[in-house]
Image (cartoon, rainbow, N blue to C red; front, top):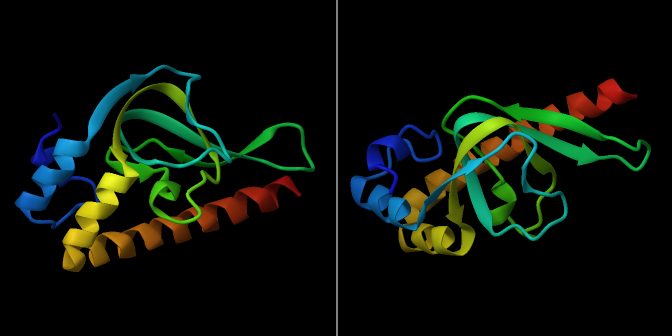
Length: 150
């Protein structure tokens, strides 16, 4: 099981009380993924929130105007999250996440995580505001990447 100390290093969880971090740790799973493996595919039902512990993940989207996918972001710094679609309606991944190198990942089931946030609304608000910042950052990255393809 992941430690609360490690969880607190994620910006999404920074400053949360130890009791809530323990509950998040209890529902989290750690997994290894090999280079070239997909964590999820664009359009799939999103049911988890993912975090990078070690390695590198490329986030890619398909364009109708091109046969190949376009990389819109790299997650290569430990303690960053991806797969926010698991906690934001309509709960479908907006990109594909492919391991750019062997990686260690942490996954949290979206339903269980959202229940924890609902049971702790003052902290849930902080977490969801941070999720909104992540979404805005990914949108900016996507726009820049797409403009480069034109």
